Image (tube, rainbow, N blue to C red):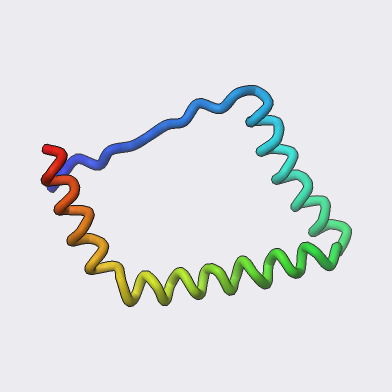
Length: 74
């Protein structure tokens, strides 16, 4: 079994602030029953369903390709 590689990306202070502000903005929208929050949830759900179908169809082939690429790197 191959060792899984992990990648870390260092964020700047401004990037951390922007990420946290985005999360808080979504929380505020939820608390205030913003219709845009409902749209966010709806389309996120649709995106996850579509991704699940793609994974069902293509996952095994994708694993083969990834293994080939990893073998080429070694």
